[in-house]
Amino acid sequence: MTSPATARNLPWYLRHEERATVDLTSHRELVVPDSVLAPTLEFLQERGQLGHEGFVVWGGKVVDEDTLHFTSCYVPQQTAHKTANGLLVVVDGVALFRMNRAFYERGEIAAGQVHTHPTDAYHSSTDDHFPLVTLCGALSLVVPDFARHGRASMDRWAWYRLREHGTWDLAADIGSRIHIEPEGS
Image (cartoon, rainbow, N blue to C red; front, side, top):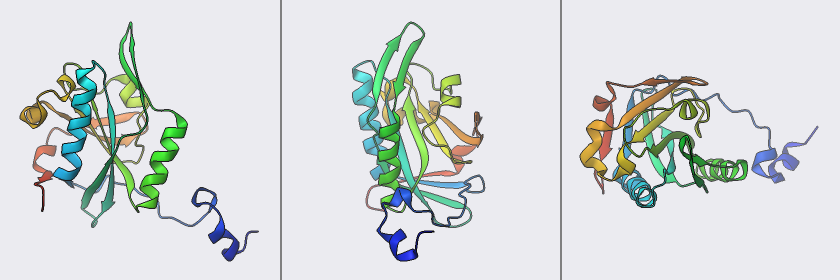
């Protein structure tokens, strides 16, 4: 058995500390500051200009039993592919590890993912079964048209919440629960 003093000297990913299970399903109020949204859209637009989809992951912190505040955006190393069946973005295991470590070191959780589609915003079967965020209640946002229209197309964005592995629910009424904070708030 590892002593507490020895455990503190281990890398974070080898420590077996007791942690509460995180479940975001009860968090109905979602706060997205402009400092998270603006760089997300900028990256997605840059990828879209190349004809590629892009992925951004949002880190967040639980404020209270009802509110989740997104606090950062993280662009994992990713490879875009064009196939006969469409477009695809691959984020390998090492990149996922780096992403999770970055969130852990900031005291955040990987609570949301954002990606683009070339036309309409929807969750594909690949999106459903191979998400980058896996906490129940996590957010998945799909922005249409490679994010070309930015916020002007927010009414066409598709917002989903993870119910269980492989099952994402379209959050049709989420508009009243998403609060975009202007810069400097």
